[in-house]
Structure formats: structure tokens, C-alpha cells
Length: 289
Image (spheres, rainbow, N blue to C red):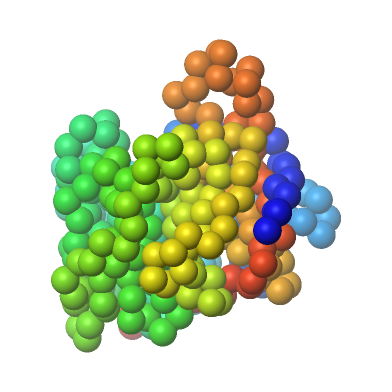
């Protein structure tokens, strides 16, 4: 199956990440972690807004009471007026760590990962937010990515990017995580698995850092589809549009030398392609009562 990817916005993000479709606005939000920015793209009007929030914003997600939550460094912040407000929660972790990727399960629980921002030590972990308290659940990776959680909330995937591994856990009551199961290990030629997301057929989409594309895997780990991009450092996809069948893709230009940037001038841009199936709607984070 041939899928053509198109440039949506030449953002030139240093580290574009965390795309999120907000149905109420019919708009896509995403972040530039190294650029300290949150971006908003409204496809119907063709407008694009950049909010310079500072810090290291690594994800942006909806809150049930009509707000947006942003992870940055060791805090979980509400985004208001284009700025990060006082954090709702702090994560107790090494000073060289920061938040990375995140998602929300069908119960409205926030799940997120952390990583060593210097990319040396295996101090990255997976957490869920219990009210205002982050609870450590899994990890031990230098760079965690994901998590992604099935529509029924019973299966969690997360990525150990440097080791090219994607792991799967059963989500038990509590919540607790069952024993890890290796879902897939990528080859060196495929690049490093980065952000992940599930679609409406319970298949896992994986962005490929230094892999020039994204790949779709069946629930048994079979590779079903590869979509090529004109950039090496592909970071994550999100499903958007009224039918959730437009796949938006973030990319990065950080760490590329002049020769590589000349080879891939669109690096750091926002892309999209028409997906063969719809994605899943993203629940909103429920605040502590």
C-alpha cells in the first residue's frame, strides 16, 4: 500500500513532539521540547500559532474541565494564556531527568514517561498520576517513549528507544502493571522507535528516529505498513480530522549537521498522511476530586 506524506507546516522545530488532536477546536497541538514552544495548527483556517512557553514542554493533553496539561522538566502544568502556570504536580526524580511522552487512558488517568535529558543513564520511568501524586510503574530506560494504552485500558505499551525495544504490559486493577512482554525489537536499519499510538484496529503505530518514517504493527507484532517521510528524525503521530483518519506527524532537526540539514531541509516540519484506518479518540485527564 502506497501512502503519500505531505508537509502541513514548515515549523523547523528543534525537537517536534507530542502531537494531540483537540476535537472541540478541530485543531492540532504539538510541542518543540528543545525550542520551549507549544504549537497550534487549525487546518480549516490554515492558521498556525506558536506559544513560547519556555522550559522543555514534552507533551500537551486535554483536561476534563476544559484546559490543557503540559509536562515540562519535573512538572505537570496547566497551559493558560499561552503560559505554563504553577505545576499541579512535581515528579521526584534525578535533576538531569525530564518528562517525555504521555497519554490518557479510558478512565481519564494520565500516564507519562521520563528520561535522562543527557541520554546517558537508565533513569527513565513510566508513571501514572494519582490525583496530584505521580506513581512510578515501570521503566529503567535511558529514553522512555509512549506509553500508549488500548481503548479498553487493559494493555499498555512503552518504548525503550536506545535499545530499539517496545514492551507490553497488562494493566491490572489498582492500577498495577503485569510482567513486561517484549512486543517487537527493531533492527538497526529501521532506526530507533520513538513515539507510539494505537489505532481503532488495536494496531500500534511507531515513529522512527533516524528511520525516515513510521511503521504500523498488528497486535501480534507483525509489520503491516511503512510510511516514508523526507526527514530522518520522526518523533510521533496523532490521528485527527473529523473522522480521525488524518495522521499528523512531528519531526526534529536537533543534532543534524549542515550537510544533513541540506539533505533534509524539511526536518522539524509538521506532516500528514491519510491513514488506512481511523485512530482512537483521546480521553481527557480527570482532575483529582
